[in-house]
Length: 157
Image (cartoon, rainbow, N blue to C red; front, side, top):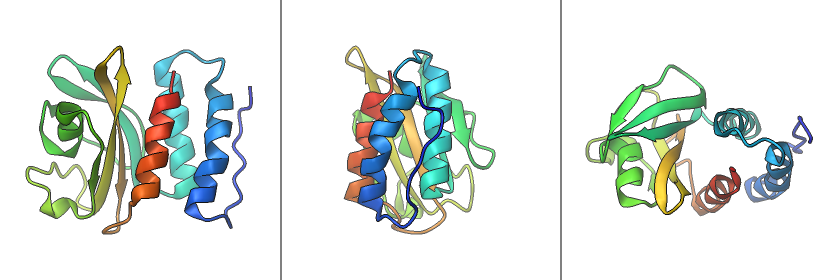
């Protein structure tokens, strides 16, 4: 198991993701603890891409509860269907939000967050957590982010 990630910072976004996926797989291959893997994924994504905030919320009853993350202090609990994270959980699909101020019911955990991408994580046919990535820039996420962050959620054991 490798416990370091080597990404050439001169690579473009797509190439950084392509280089990252097999390294993340190697990092998690012998670790079955979900929280440990989420913690490492959060740290790696923050380090490689410089996202403002990146982390996980876990489904517990009718709420999402804050899990491992990297960034500023965050909302601890989010109700089903509320905000971008709750919408991803309820709809069971990725939410790509170029401007959070225009998202109905957006929950402002930080006033510095300007755009957001939330990907649901599935186990046994149900959403059991979401990966939440925030940027302090408008329109900072694109289809490459969505595609590769969906791949990353798919490899978390």
